[in-house]
Amino acid sequence: MSSRPALRFVATAGAVLAVDQASKAAVRHWLPLGASVPVIDGALDLTHVRNTGAAFGLFPGAMAWFMLSAVIVLAGIAFVWWRHAPRDPWTVVALGLIAGGAAGNLIDRAFLGGVTDFFDVRVWPVFNVADVGLDIGVAIVVIRLLFGGEREGGGPHAEPGEAAGSEPREASDG
Image (cartoon, rainbow, N blue to C red; front, side, top):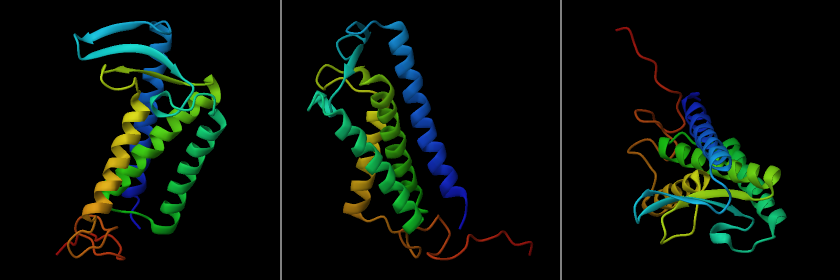
């Protein structure tokens, strides 16, 4: 199997995790808890919120359950990778987005006792980069499941130009 899907997965998960943790650290450093700074007048503020619940602040105080859920999601992704070795680029990126987002919020819960949220679009609860990664990753998975992720002649796990179950093609000299 090609190492490209694994590299794509690690790069995606690592990028989401790095940007998430760096942006949260910047918000915690530069913006006092509860403070808000307008970025786009009437549309986007940076608002420093500490969320001890789930999405939208639901179920505050159930930290252990949310941490366990993140560990289960990460273990599920590891199982899918081990069992199915996904190679479809969209599936690989989706799993990377979900893994990076789950890991980012898990780190906050484990080490800070709550998740740092800061994107405030006023018509939606305050959220962060990890949430964006999770949401986009889940949306891609749902779309792939609903509308099919199979590539013409390649099956659901094929890279472009590869048949399912085959080794990646090498360029020929002749």
